[in-house]
Length: 296
Image (cartoon, rainbow, N blue to C red):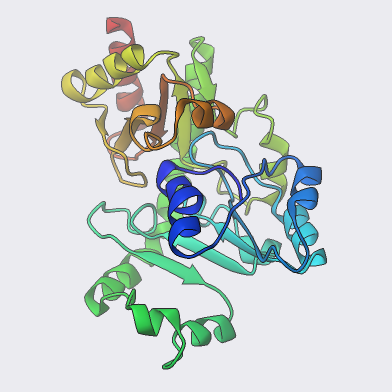
């Protein structure tokens, strides 16, 4: 398991061992030897990871990790919430792909839903009348919600391309201003070449970038200016909306992790996660960002 957001971390680290007797070992997916050494044949059953990690934007080498896991008899489950359209984990070897549909696939910040994508045999087993988890526990999508998603998926491709295009422009310009930016589209990002080798053509490098302001105080000052004075974006813990969404993740989406766990995951106290939107023109929004930055 790769370190993930605090909700997933708490589920795997605390809830599942206590309630379901399921234990989890957390590994750095960049360290393939660690992944190999952690897999106990006959005991370990699943490698669960994010294609692009929330929120440090580490990119997983999906083909190699799938090869390692399959050689050991493991299934691979990939959370592709950050990179729909950009990456196709099933084509790269994943057995199961999961999405928080609430984010990019919805695009409207108005629906809460998730998806489990896999083979027909997997889906049918989950829906089995006598033993299927979805049939017995009930997490089946409401028909109206499913219809709403079916109406939004046709333009997901266009939306993702614009999210990614603007994130690339903003990341490049922020770097030129001397800001500490984490974005896989920048050549100095350690996973730039890897992501480029796996990504579907014309989808760029993702719509999320992180800006490290070093301290929580500076991060909150900047976000306050961007939301309350400049109208550049909105402070919110979600992503994939048409407006830019911002959060100081150490005190929000990762607040359930302790100081040591945040340090291991590379989460700075002043790290701002930005889900870059596409409302307004790119240049209009960039001018707003520069004004907010100048004020602090």
